[in-house]
Image 1 (spheres, helix red, strand yellow):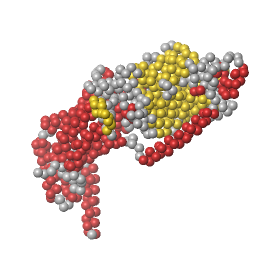
Image 2 (tube, rainbow, N blue to C red):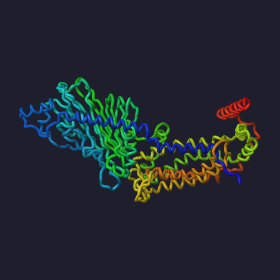
Image 3 (cartoon, rainbow, N blue to C red):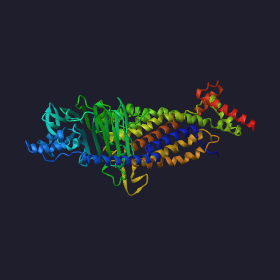
Length: 637
C-alpha cells in the first residue's frame, strides 16, 4: 500500500503556526548575554543604592516633635538642620497624623509626614479570589514613597518625605480638595494638592511652590522620586508577575515599556505619563507638562514562586521638576484603579495603551474586533462570562469559515491531482528539476494553486496570536467563574498535586486537557487528507512521519504551556477546535464533492491554460535558472 505523504505547503503553514506558538511562549526568555548584562547592571545599581544611602545619612532629618510656638531657641536649633523649612516643624501638624479622602471607588490616606499617599484601597475589588473579604490595596505598609529632593540656597539637601506638611481639607462643590503644605513661612510653602471627584479613580495631583525662590536653589530641577513595591493580588503570583510592567508614554504619543527581567532600566525623554502596571491594576502618574526625561527601573521580586508570594515587582521612577521664574508648578493626575481597557480609554489620556493587546495587526484585531465584540457580549447581553466566551468563539470561527473552506477545497483539489503528480514523479524520478517544472505546468493547466492551502492558514495566524494577547488582558474575566473554574483569568485547578512537575506545575487544569484532546482529534481528522494532497518532495524530509509526531506533540505542548494560563484562553481554544472540527466535518461530507472537483479539473485541462501568476512565473524562472546552472556544472565535470 502506498505510503501517505504530506502536502509541503500545508506543512509550511503548520510549522509556521507551531513556530509562532513557541515564540509566544519564549519571547521573553533572556539570552546568556542578557543575563550577564543584567547581573552587571544589578551590581552597579546596588553600588549606586549604597552610595545613595550614605548620602541620605548626611541629609537633614526633621525632629519628630514640634517646638513650642515662640520658642526662638528651639527654632534656631531647627534652622541648623532644616534651614528655611524649620518653620514647618513649629506647627501643630508636625506629628504623625493622617487625612483620609474617599469616594465610591477609592479610599486614600495621606500622611502629614511627607505629604504623600500612604494607603490606596480600591473599594470594589477583592484580592486573590471572590469572597476573600480582602480589598485590593495598591499602597499600604510603606510599600510606596513619593519624595522631592530639595536643594536649598544654603547648600542643604532635604527630603520632603522626612518633613511635615500641614493639611487643609475642604469641599469644592462635590469634589474633595486636600492641600498639603510644607511651609517655610506663613505664606511660603511647597504644596501637594489632591482633588478627588465623586465616583472616579483619577485624582488631581498638583505640585507647586510659593515664595520659595529664596529658599530653594533653582539652578537645577528638583528630582521627584516615586517608587512602588507591588503587592500580589491574584491567585497565581508567577502568572501575575508575568504581566507586571512599567509602561510609559513619551514624545507626544509614543508608548513603550521597561521590560521583564531581574533588573531592567530605561531613560526616555519627554515623558507624559508613567504607569506602574500590575496584571489587573495600575497606578499611573500623568503630567500636563511633560517631564524632560525619566529614569525608570523595574526589579523582579519573584525569584521562587513558592517563597516569594507577597510582592511581584519593585518599580522606581525619578523625574526632574523644572523651575519657572524660581518656582515649581506642575499639574498632574494620579490613577488608582483597574487595568481595564474600557475604563482606561474613557479618560482620553492614552492610558489604555498600557494594556498589552499586541503590536501591528494583532493589536488592531484586538482593538477593532475582539475588545468591542467581547465587551458587547459580556455586558450588553448580560451573559455569564463562560457563555460569552463560547458565543464569542462561535462568531469568530463562523466569520473565518470561508477561509477554512478555501483551505479544505485546495486540499481536495490537490488530492484529485495526486495520481497525475505520482505519474510525473515516476516519469522524471531521475530529473527532480524537470519533475518540479512539469508539476507546476500541471497545476497551471488544471487551474490549481498549490499555495491556496497555505495562504488561508497564514491569514488565520494573526487571529490566533491576537487571542493569546486578548484573554490574559481581559479584565472582565477576573474572578468570574464558569463550570468548575472559579476564576477565568487564572488556571482552573481541579487536582492539587503533592509535588511539582518541571514546566507543568503542581496542579492539573482541566480546560487545557480538553483543548489538547480537541487539537488531537482535529489534527487526526485533517492530517490524512493533507498527506494525500501532494507527494513527497524530492530532497525533503519525510513530512508524513513528522506529521504523525506532531499529532502527539501539539497536544502535549498545549498541556504544558496552558496548565498555568488563564482558563478563559484554554476554554477559547477548546471551543475553537471543536467548532473547527464541526466545520471541517460539514465541508468534507456535505459541501465539497470530490467527483465534481475531479470533473472540473479534467474540464480545465482541456481548456487553454491560464496565464501563470507573477509568483508562478518567478518560481518557473528560478527553476529554469537552477536547471541551466546544473547543466553547465555537469558539462564542466
